[in-house]
Image 1: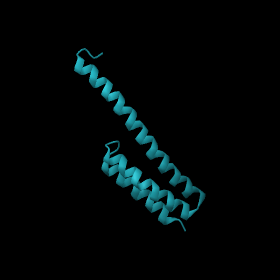
Image 2: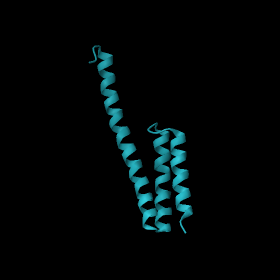
Image 3: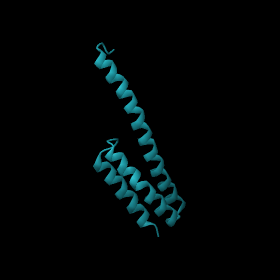
Image 4: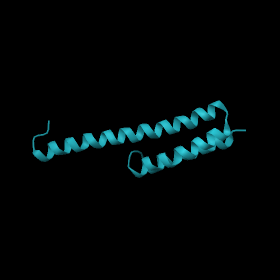
Length: 87
């Protein structure tokens, strides 16, 4: 357990930051799931719209440090490829 005042403050700060990051990651995953569901349903226009909404959300997660920049690029790239591949 934290002993010094500064260590106790850091524990509080980290707890707040963790909550924020959890919310951001969850929000990103929701957007990704919407794209995947649209792909599963076979509706290309809905999938494209969902991707358009998900892309900034994924990039925002990377900007805020929730996920790595390359991870976000990979996620967007793979989702875009799957949407494009729909006949």
